[in-house]
Length: 411
Image (cartoon, rainbow, N blue to C red; front, side, top):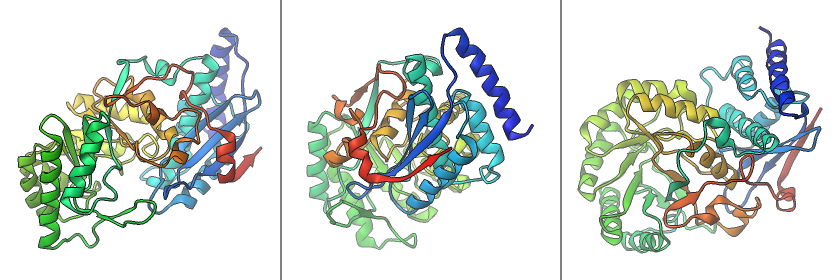
């Protein structure tokens, strides 16, 4: 079926159900695309506008590394081709049209799926607002009243084991019961707190000893009751990461994240078989199709789809449902804006095999101020409460985002 015919059929069904609820049909009339360059990160946000004044916001989670402008341009193309003039309610139909008719989505990667994810989040935001319910109520309803979170980003200015230990103690004092850091990364010590990952898949003996000492120092500082997570960012060869992973086993590590390239499930399986720490991966895997081989091989224990680049809210829920059949837990990745956090919490609420949610609570105040109430600000004792407001439960602050407007797309 042609894309336009397919969307028209789905829209007719949505309009019929909406009429029963006394709601008027909407059309997407425009989109604001923002590149919110704050504190060394650049979240790409899309705000969809409709003819009835209802808006929705989403986050294309390519907030660091390379790809910001490409992602913003991708959002623009997707809006122009699949959203303008369309009813925003048939979300699955719109997602399928983007998947089937962009051509490159089948086998596609970060930039394309980040764009799709941002649009999909914004559509759910609109639908939840129209129906007066949080998004999780449209996904089967909540399974919990609060979401466990773990802290990341706290270690980005530490260079020595004692400094990692001191910063980790601060995180625990702030109430977090789980924290993650990067034993192989090097602090850039720049004003924005960037870290540099390993290049050429190798480190010298001194770097290895420093990594082991840092992990031991953090474990000693936080004690045995706090979950300690290690992100290896696929930086070493398979043999080297196995040897290093075995040295970490004595530190009671909760998970060993991305030990090898996510595109090599067989190597991941090899690590899983030889390192006695649960394996986590997923931030650079896209859609349920990208996770399938990992599940089939039982190459990981914890999956980490990112709602901002794996395909969106519903796609994350589908990945979680698949993972449940393989006895795997899901701990969604989250590295972008408070919009991404809000979208993540919506799906966290309604997955049965949810583990914990990544959180960056130590970013600059301006980062959190782009929405009316950033979820990160409500973290207490290692948990976030579920929002009760309609849609994603947050709203962009126009005055704060205005300086970051990249482009407005109109019909």
